Length: 377
Image (cartoon, rainbow, N blue to C red; front, side):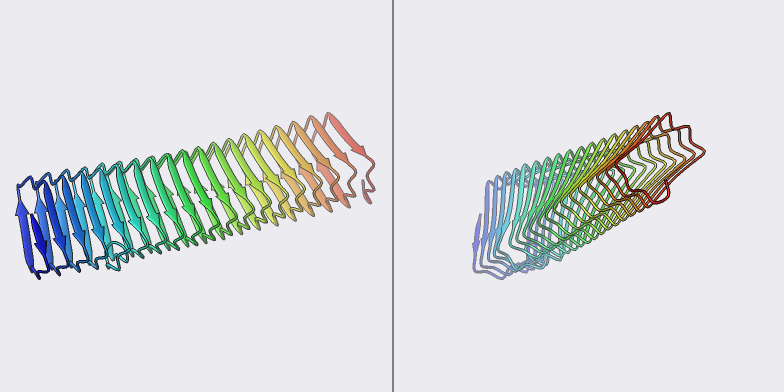
């Protein structure tokens, strides 16, 4: 079925197979296809205020250079969904792009703003958005093995109850990135500012931020086996009630790093300033800070089997009611180091000035201070 250069105020196809449906250069205020297979559906250069496809398989759905205020796909597999270079207020620019309950092996959106992109209950093995702003990108209850966003601002990116094995964002600002109750084995953000990054209730085996500012990075109730920030500022990094087996910050400022009620088997900060590092009620089997200033490092009610600080100034290091089997500080100034009510089987400080070192109500089976100036020791 081919329609060319027609207005077509209402085009409705119900319960049809439609092996090839092509619409070219038509306005088409309402295009509706219901309960049809439609092996190839192609729409080129159409405005299309409402394009709706429901309960269709649609092996190839292609939309190029069309405005289309609303594009909705419901309950369709759609092995290839491609939208490229369209102004369209609903895909491309796109006020509302909605995909509901569809598998969609490869949905692709290229060079469109896309004010609202919503995917609900769909697997979507490959979802790619290239060079689009995308004010709101929402994925609900979908696996999404590969979700890639390149070169777009994306004021709000939300993923709810989806696994999403790799989630990749490259070269975009991303004012709000939210992941709720999703596993997300690989979440990668490269060269993006991303004012708030929020992950709630997800495992997040690998979370990587590369060369991004990230004014607020928040993880709540997530395990997060590997959280890595490379060369990013990260004014606020908050982890609440999460295990976080490996948290690594490399070459990042991180003005505020806060962890509450999380185990965190390995927390590593390398070559970062980190004005405020706060850990509240966390075990933290390994906490390592290398070559970082760390104006305020605070641990409250945490076990911390190994706490190591190397070549860092650390103006204020405070540990309150923590066990801390091994606490080691090497080559750091540490103007104020305070440990209260902790056992601390081995506490070692080497080559540090340490203007104030205070230990209260602690056993400290091994307390070693080597080559330190230390005004009040």
